[in-house]
Length: 583
Image 1 (cartoon, rainbow, N blue to C red):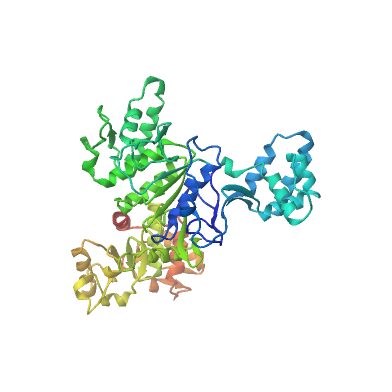
Image 2: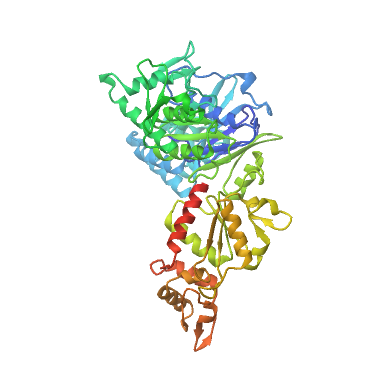
């Protein structure tokens, strides 16, 4: 069973106020300062859960250490919980094969779960006096009260044992007996750790165990790189009886190729089994020659492709890794492997990855506090908390400056039609400068006393300028020429419209149909390259004008009619290249 939610209370940095990770996804990112409790979340998954799971490897598990594991903020017993969605409960009990006499109990239980509309229940383990015991959730009692008139009788009938009495504690204990038949702690996936300290040079230490080509240290699967060279050598050229292992080596190579973005990349282990070599574009060199970042990718790739259906805890994927590789690495883990991931990080680069659950951990007066970051503003605050400042970090990778809102509507639609993966606010943002304000703007850092420097807001700036020409012989004014020169000198992107303004790019038929859809009584008398549309749109032979923003929305809405002309396609392609290069 994948982890849907985990609760922690009175464990290490966590105090007596229950903290939860809820609605966990396939990729979960946990951010926060040093020494606030991020690693203790992973310790809960890696050290505590395997003690109860029937899926855990039969190695010894790390035992509770009172000096290290007890809460620093409370003397109360430690407690951990797993969330069981109502749909999982219903599915389990619907498929259960119990004695015929119990079937009425099953149907009543399923009906109660569905009628109450609960999202699910929590199951808990409580550590006291050297052992872990089960503890029920109040929702379990609510379900059983709804399903059965006498909970004690059903518990005895179903499980062969029951607590006597119809008081709250007795009913809670008996509800636990009934619902404990589906024990999430027993069915949760095996967990493994990829530690922050990783190297292919690590050796297997004495006393470590090996099972299914996985190294265990103190009962915990270790993917820090120890023994990796020898393991990959076996996968590359397996014995005939283990020839299926060669598929894992192919998957491993595909992982590395995808993340570093080079289809020619090929990892090889020579017969000596002492090093890993990497061939890129026909050149074969030892892995160490490519820098430690590639080594980090190799170690994580080996771990992620070695197993399926596991919960893998990854510490600090940013170690020696470029931000772009950090994102590609985690996206590959999410999309191309069959494991669930919990990742601790100090990196701002990974908190905006799509389809990712992001949680922050902070240290309060009563212990570690976990919050799920649902809003973009929450994530900005965490970036600030990680030590980044707006002067260090732009909040998007590229800024496109335009005169006004209608320009943004046309450009946003064109960019996202060309590449659906682009996300405004992350990959790029479109900001307005207002036509007459252009004379106050510059791309030259040295002119800070005279102008507003656009590149201080974002070093990857593009600008789109209406030419405002009335005919082909008109000249650009001195302000436009200055800004064009400054952007070109810095190899930034500048686009001056080939016609008078951006609306002149819209093909006449599409323009007329869009105007009619908004203002049925209006027509375009003329739609040329330098036409001033504010004077060319008339109603009953009178000049009528138009709302540029409403028109832009309508042109974009009528996708099949939104034909553009002149150099539009070339400029959009060039702008798209600039945005891509900024990401």
